Length: 227
Image (cartoon, rainbow, N blue to C red; front, side, top):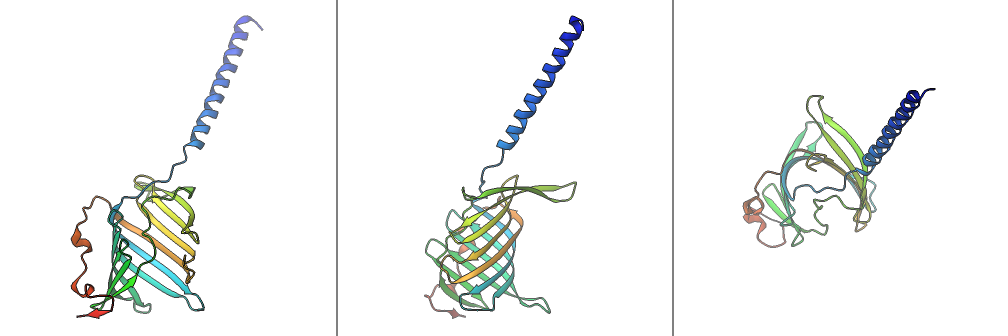
């Protein structure tokens, strides 16, 4: 082997070594580049589909709710409004309208059905906009068509000590795609299985006081009152 062949062989080996080095570095960067928990907008509106099953302690028959909801979420002021339609007749698909105002700051829920407002205690915190730091990243998947799709991140972990929470958010802006809970209620009163699916999430909205202003029938004390 002449000197030119030796130099060429050494050069080829060095090139392969450099390529291998950068391949290792790129793989290391890729592994280290797992996303950190993100935050959804602190204020947004969304269309939400909710399916839940609640088994109260001592009961053998779960209460199942199927709801279509227009959600207004305001973490800044600790309040939400849900304008919903709950399924009352699976055979016909008939639904009944309701509106719920959740005041997390003062721990009250106001529910309006058929013109009657009832007030109950609200003991659970508002689900925070940021994915908890202790949640585990579970990878990604894509939704949509080949021409237009969104990458979705999966996060999961223990929530409020007793519930397993699974959260799917948009890779682009952390907008919620779905949120699922199952396990024991923190107060031990029931077992829960709840799934929320989000559509048309709008974080470019400006929320006003009027979005959460309760009607007059909800301003007369704790008892259920109606028009």
